[in-house]
Image 1 (cartoon, one colour):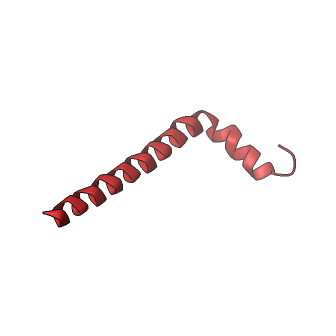
Image 2 (cartoon, one colour):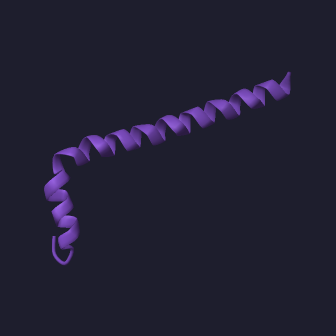
Length: 49
């Protein structure tokens, strides 16, 4: 990387860890989105009754 020596050092140091960490974060965001979606649908169904 040109012009970003700090980021290059981080990628060189934590490179093998970045892929699983990124996948974990994306999975957690997806799980949170689905949880909020189902919670919203439950509240909508409860209001209909």
